[in-house]
Amino acid sequence: MTTVTKIRAYNTDIRYVVLPAAEYVISAVGRTNAKPSVLAREAGADVAINFPFFGAGALYGYNVVSGNVANTEIPKTAARSEFYGISGKYAIGDAERRVVDFAVQGSPALLRNGAVVFAESVANDQTGADIVTGRAQRTAIGIHANGDVVFVISDGRTVANVGLTLTELATVMRDQLACVDAINGDGGGSSMLYVDGAIVNNVDERATGCALIAKKKETKVTNMKIVIDAGHGLQTAGKRCPDDSMREFAFNSVVARYVRDTLAEYEGVTVKFSHDDTGAVDVALADRVKIANDWNADVFVSIHANAAGDGWSTAAGIETYTSNGASATSGKMAAAVQKRLIAQTARKDRGVKREDFYVIAKTKMPAILVEAGFMTNAEEASLLKTGAYRKKCAAAIVEGLAEVFALKRKVVAPTPSTNAVTVIVNGKKLAEGRLENGVTYVDNLPVRALAEVIGASVAWDGVTRTVTITK
Ligand SMILES: [Zn+2]
Image (cartoon, helix red, strand yellow):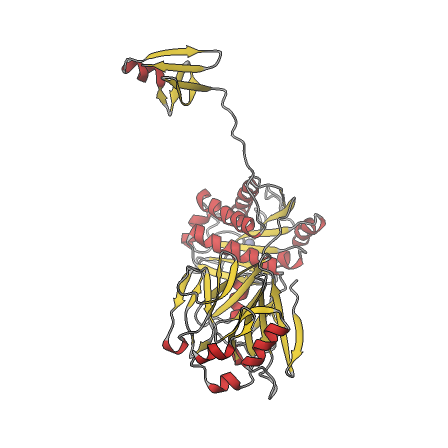
């Protein structure tokens, strides 16, 4: 859980979250006309704040989202500063001449190296007098001397004469929040702070199209217990292609096996199925949940193929679900798995959704449910039947889990070949060769035959298993 601290200054409630740079990854996410809390949820964020400055339906200023320049400076926003990130380090300044992971432009800079620079920065800005001197709801970002980042939101919209002037905000950030650098973000009705799945301040959120998000780095789990759940049974009524050319269980269970076998390549992972792998029994939903809860599983993944209507239809694509009350970790898993499912299969992205499906609502651990394509769509049905598509889906699930839980592949020591032969040419070791039916090969080329063609002499020492070629 993330701690939100509330303080009071200038007759105004101010809430903030400290994000230790070593524990959180901060980035900017964007999509035109999306609300910041929606973007935060989709990205599996733990904490988010609306940023940058927003107006007339567009972002203002120089902004970089996911490594791409989302929009460039416009005259109105010239000489403003940006909050930006480079390789896990965060700063406030001029991002435009640097290669950054993300940047969001604020207005104006409030603190630099512990000094209030508001007067200087506002002089370079075209911010209106009302914004400079008026009290308003504010969002801001500060940085501690040790590099930790602070997301700040003040009240100021609901009650008259409540809120902070920019000078007051700068002072609070320096004197009460111990920031050395700080920048004002957007304010007024756009203000939004999102923590652990909920908006912590009560405003009518605007669709500003961009958010700064922070995700807590997962600590590496040793002996991670993962339940894989292939939905339904082979004979479950309805769950099949309209022409009965494939049962949903066939897809679900084969993907489940691929996931299990691929996870076996990772360190410290144990997998359990909550379904009957033979498909003979459609294990009751309550029993599937009990298997996961009794085992104290760390993660639950339910695999399904989708259906729309009774016959063939055009509905298509892939979606991943968490329950409505899902933890931030569930959201992260869903976002990571969905992203990779689309990357692997290039099917339509139906997004991450929330629905209280029994197995993900009742399991106690982070849980997702994947709908990996429509059995009722002719094109997708033919894909769902193929081993190649099933392997892609399994790979996406494993890669998503590996990302969220920092799973490491087992290091497999190369087994020394009993056929290994050393090849020495004119006193120098050439390569490791391989002896097969009395013939030594290097890179599948027969060494003796080649050497003799060029008139070299070839000697074989069976004790040291060495071929010596001299010319
Ligand atoms: Zn299903």
